[in-house]
Structures are given as structure tokens and as C-alpha cells.
Image (tube, rainbow, N blue to C red; front, side, top):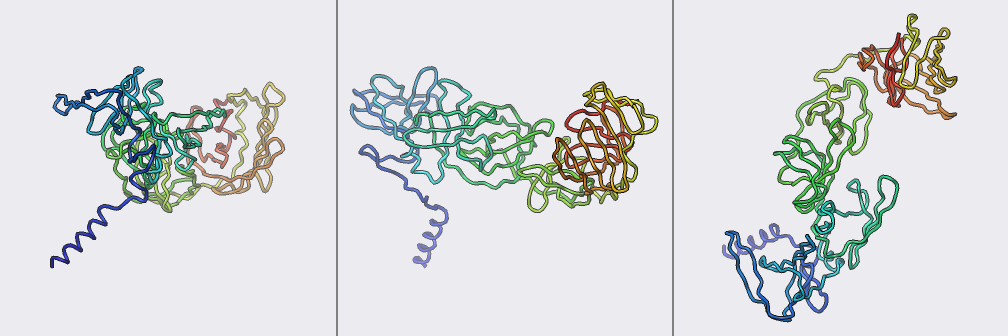
Length: 438
């Protein structure tokens, strides 16, 4: 029985204390370097050092001249540098202190998957907590990082310019990075979101309890790198949130797509009317859904609890109503000059309509659209611009669509992201939106 218990304890120890694939220490400068160490120091004479205790009192000890001590953390601010020894003792850099930094590549060799965080408050608090990582695996901004004695990086900025710099090893904290899944998480309490995985780092503001984030698959220093939709559902913002404040979002119930729409997330997916999806969460105007094991966000209004109606079929042309005499767009006023034609003051600004047995043809300012008949969701749309031909499709036919001009019925949305209304033509898109009509 005793032998059995010993064997069981050995097995339990194996599972509860897995060993790292990296060594716990390395040799450098004639001494051992341990994980978490940033340097070593000695003193030119015997000195007394202090640490602050949890109860507010201070403890002290005398360190001997020429005795080496490991340094585990470094603080830099207000033109001062402080070294942290073991057991919480803190020493300010003076002429009495001789410090030697451990090269960054030696320190990194003790980690399975090292991550690099800037800990220098000295010059610019904006850089404190900045996380440097290679490649686009976790989606930008990313740095082309080289590790030698110090950290060197090359960064391609959004303006197209390249930024190059090196960071001294004493300005870098190394933390183990952990691969995480890329599911959705929800905040369990109000929290500051940070531009890097470091408490006290530069904050991008506060998110309220219940805010939904998509994991970017990386945890470091107790923070999960995530992305969150902008206020109005525009592009994602990347940020860092404490792992302890996040809980996974669970699937709720079945939903149906009411009309064609693009689901957005790590990648995009064309979703069609009647597609069956699982609702994950919804807030304000946006909903997160799951389909085929992937998560996407869509406008909340595109989801239905029961199967939607069949898609309308457009059999009437995009010719303007007979009573229309003027169409006002953001780029000009188009007045009726003949049947099926409107012209603006510029010779290059005009609208033409033409219907054949096979297509509805619409042309505005030299850009032509050919809609195959009958117009249904998924039917072909050909766009010709500057001599280039591009084949798209009808993404959706909206029962009603309302903008600043008014309400329109059976509005056709193309895969180019442009909207056309029977009886009016082009009403909305990337530019030249319809503002009014008479």
C-alpha cells in the first residue's frame, strides 16, 4: 500500500508540475543567470539597503563591497534609475553601484516563447508597456524584431514610412507568451484598456461591463490581446485586457439571416438570406454570430428569429418615375434633358437608363452597371469603369431602405456596396449619394 501511494504521488507531481522545455538558468559573465534576471550589480563599499514592508515599516540590510547580487527589475523615471534585488530590496543607481546588464538574447533563451515589453517611464509614458512582437500572426501593429544584446525592430507605419529603432535591454521586461483560442470574451467589470500588457501603461480609455472582445490568440503578463469594434461598428481597435476580467461568450440560440450581408471578423464571409446561424451576443446595433465554427459580426437588424420571407424579385427597371425632373447628389444637380437621361452642368456628369430583354442598364458619370434580369439576390451585376470590367452580384434586396432622402422599397444592394432603388436609380454608396429629388 505504501509503495502504491508513493507511485501515485510521483504521477500526480508529473501532471501538476510540468517542466519547461527551456533551462531554468544559463551561464554568463562567469555566473549563473536565472529566469527573470535582468542584470547583476555590486557596490564599491559596504552600504545599507532598504525595503518597504506590507505594513508600511522598512527593513534594512548591509551588503558587502564586491559581493554580486542579481537584479530582477529596473525602474526608470524622473531621470532616476532603481534596481530591484531579491526579497524586495530596492537600490537607486549612484556612484556606489556597479551594474552590468544581462544581454537580452541570454535572458530570452530561458523562455519558451518570450514576449518583450517596454518598461521605461523615463522619456515618454506612451512607450511604457509597449509590446514588441514579430509578424502579423496576432494582427498589427507588428514589429520585425531582432534580439541580440538589445532589441532591434523595424516597424511599417500606416502612413507607409518605416520606423527603425533599438531598445536597450534594461528597458525590456520579458514575459512568457501563451497561445489562446480566438473566441469571444465579455468583460465582467468596468476596465481600462491598455495599449500594452503592463499595469500603469498608456490607457486608451475605459470599457464598460458586458463589452465584447475577440481574442487575438495571445496572452502575456496576465493580459489578453483582443480586438473590439469601434463605437459605431467601424474598424476594430486592438487592445489589452486583464485575463481575470474576461469570461467566454457562450452561444445563445438560433437565428436566420434576413437578407444578404457580409459577416466581418478575422475574415469576411458572404451570408445569404435564410442562412442559419447561432447568436453569440448583441449590443446596440451590432450582433456577433457563429457559423461553420467561425465568429462574425453583423448589423443586429439583419437577424430574424424565424425564417424570413422570400426575396423580392425586381422586374421593373431602374428608370426614374415619369414625374421626376431633378436628382440632387452630393456631387451635383442632375436635371432631366430627355427620356431616360439626366445631365448636370458638367459635360462629364450625366445619368442614362436603358432596358433590354436581358438587362437593366444604368450609367452615371461614365460608370456603367448591367443588371441581369430578373434581379434577385445572387443575380449577376457587371460594373464597367475606366475600361475595366468587374463582375459582381446582388448581395441583398431590402424590403425598405431609409436614408436622409426618404424611404425606398425593394432597394438592391450590390457586392460593390452600392444601393439602387427601382424608379430612382443610384441612391447610396461610397460617394455621390442621392440627397433629394423632385
